[in-house]
Image (cartoon, one colour):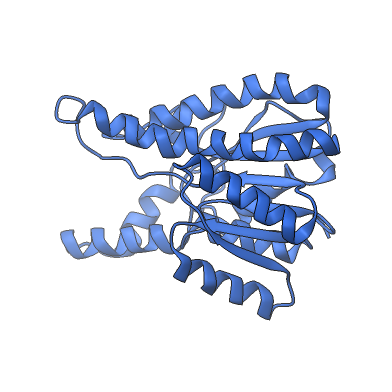
Length: 259
């Protein structure tokens, strides 16, 4: 298994990518620390993993609070004895308003979660990873960082900042054999997107499949990438197969965007 005997923290465990990251990590043999702000949802994912024979803990965490990030790292250490991987997938949704209408404070709020939340968690696990002289951190970013849609100002800027910070951290953490990379996601076929398309269809009266086909037509592989497939790609950065990769950003979008 790809992550056998590794201990991995996953933040932002919600109905979409975060859940798939946690579940797929467990399937690949990792012991997983799940975190998000909703204890109820965390418990559901915890049950799913343990019922399948995996090992996990669920720790309610708001990455906007340094103390809670540190508590998550300590709880993981207390339970499993080490931290081999951190996958930062927590984020705040874009406001989807024009720059003229948007409050600059909204940018700060998004930056505080989407970018600084990942950096707080990185800082929380750094002492352990440096002491171990091993570890891998994966920041889940988005196509919005380089190709934003209208109204994604706050979210796009936060994701772009996180990609830049990742490259800087790669330099600092490299001498300790700690790697940090980005998996840049595009459209993800999963529960959140399915709900979005259903809402669009209801609002316009057009067939839901029409919206799906419009998006898929812009993707080289001709399909909207399933979120579990994208989760597996991101987790590759935690595995030993990428031990010589750090400071990189990988597009995981089925060929919608090339760079």
